[in-house]
Image: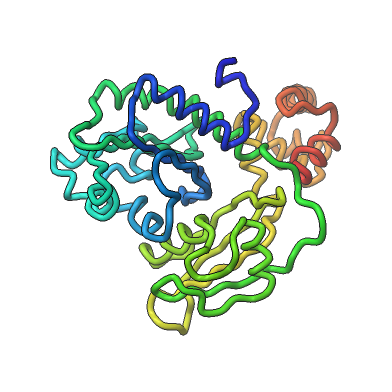
Length: 330
């Protein structure tokens, strides 16, 4: 079965893609990450022949100021880059090379942003031990795969689980100090962190939380990500500098992501056009056909035509099914 036609979960997509890519791009180790397309903060990972990412990886691997940063690759005309080329043959200029790659004898790095329809849904990095490195042809080949893999990750990540069941915990707050140790945490925050598959103890914090915290520490600005919990419920993590505390303290609010905050992700996963996304947004707000037509300055007939396209892409037959099965209970 072709990878592009299979309905796979995120782990399966990474497993299959990594295995297939290894035939054309041999490597000694690799890591795959999902990202929130709105902020480019990493929300999940899958590693091969290397340990899972920890706080140190969260601190150095995706620095916005480093060479071949995720933002540069995602927004640039070419979504793949070789670290040695980007540094002009001096990879030691890169903090992640000095702190993460060289100490582990990984001297060649090829990084690719998985961009689909203008949004970045993840990335992968391939590593080679000395004396190997990646070529321009391999870089360009990886770029050609970016769109296909981006669509697969997008679909698997957004549609991979159903809605969570059971009572929804209250919003929770967790505060971390400069060394990433928990200063304070509410019971509700413990529940949210458990949904992310981790206990709220020092050294065992979930990777999405660590990446959000490092983004705040690096920029001094608040950031927000959306990630799927093990229950299938969408979780919103809002991290910001902790006002009135010691320098580099970060507070994180964890709560259920409101439907409106994930509607754009779900619309994108079904390949809705920009016009169809506008129409779906109005349907979510309960507007009738005549009201949608007036707001979008199109005819009611055109509204119905767009709706038929939306229903076909989402695999539903009515507005009620679209809202209830695809957005409120995806």
